[in-house]
Length: 104
Image (cartoon, rainbow, N blue to C red; front, side, top):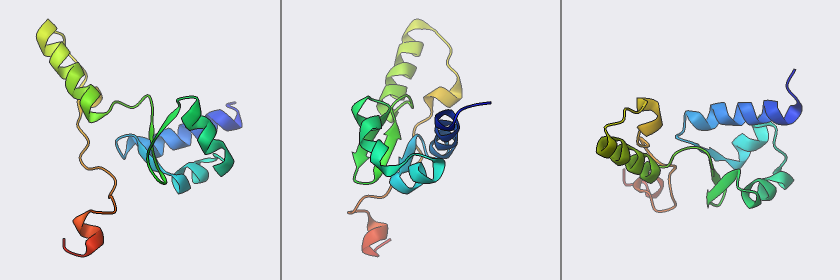
């Protein structure tokens, strides 16, 4: 049986996977990560703080890394799994997004 950390990490990955690797502070807490441990996970490189309250799993490919990986594969004639190369459909809303200003 997996320990509490592994279970929390699995739950968080499932949440983040459907959001192109992104998750919120509240989602991390619901997955089982105490708020006081969030800074630790950023410090050791497990998570990347993208914005206040918004994080990304460090091992999840970014749009830029996926683009580089695709270009490298095309240059070498390699084949890639589609799921590893997808671009984010949308990023978490920022404070300046039209939807937040009510002009969408």
